[in-house]
Image (cartoon, rainbow over all chains, first blue to last red; front, side, top):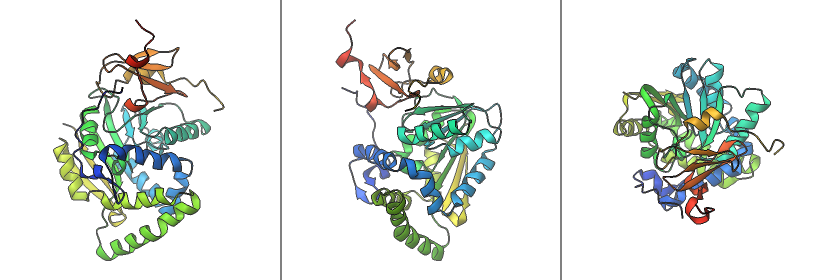
Length: 255
Length: 67
């Protein structure tokens, strides 16, 4: 038998899979299933859903991150590798790409191979809540469009802090809360009506994309995420809204 | 699938620890496994990618060859 992980799932998100109440022990597997099913179409879907804007957000994220050649990056929920690739091509040091989903990760590794961009990148399947890395190992930790899908967000934040060196920086890019009310209404209507249909059309998986929309709505707002980062022991916490808060970059340091 | 024997990055294997115990791992190159004695688990390496998840790991107690 596998030893029990002895974790208390404290994050309120743990009990929800999108809008469906689930046992926290089930959520991790359900989310993995979503990404297993959509892995091969994930990048195309992101482009269609956001009209390409996710590329602009990621570019901003990399610029804020300010990669340096001697620094080591851990990119969690690395998926197909956009952030680590951006880090490397902007002069960042070695990057480890970690994701709970094997299908997404090998998709990204194959893509890096095809483009001849393997150097300085390595891949490991792992869970953001219990990372397979020693304490104080990395200069930078990134998680882009990943924290929302983690069962226990607070555990993931504590693990992020643990693996960072003192002075190391935490960067999170995630869908967030639209700051302007009329815009929020339009955005909600768009995401509820259009995204699952696009998912059905392109990835042949309406449910997977319905999950994505619902998980965005349930994710903590900018201010609540800041409180939870504080609780995880981070310092110098701040955030920047992107596209009026459709997404946000949260950043902090381990001291 | 076209390149079935991709090797895991040796530098990565050096840094990895057991996700449960955060203790050291022993690399079994023949079996393509990373063994955590303390957790009693062997983590598989598939297609050069270490799978560091307890629920994908082989339990050493259940089917150890006997020592």
